[in-house]
Structure formats: C-alpha cells, structure tokens
Image (cartoon, rainbow, N blue to C red; front, side):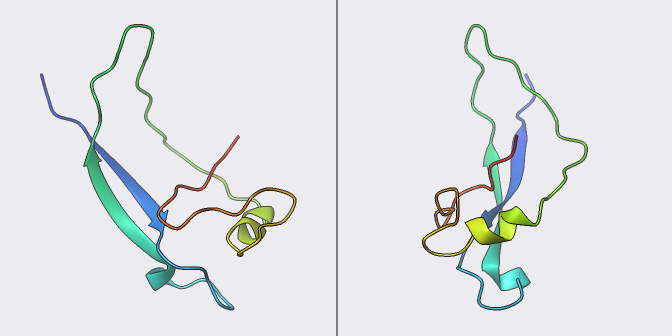
Length: 75
C-alpha cells in the first residue's frame, strides 16, 4: 500500500494588517488509515470568502476564531 501525505497550510500567527506568508506554516503529515465507512477525497480547487479574514482575528466574528495551528474551516 502506498503511503499518502496530506499537505496543508496551518495558521502560525494572528495576522496584523495584511496577511503575510509568515502567518502560515506548511505542514505535511501522513494520512491516517481509513476505517470502515470512511473514504478519502482529494481537493482540486478551493475558494475563500472575505469573511474568512475575520475568523483569523482573536475573538473571531460571527464564528469562533481559528486556533493557532488549525485549518481554515470550509463548507
């Protein structure tokens, strides 16, 4: 079986002013083994909404803030 790697950008620091590269950290981690009833997908494209910027601020907005080291949620 081939080992699969998940690639993601994680929040490294709360942005001050414009978002910069150092506000994020590139993370590579092994994809865990799938359990019964689970399946694996591959994201081809993503879209960001202007509201995402507010979620990065401490205290959040209409949603809870994104934690340091966390992924950006999406629908």
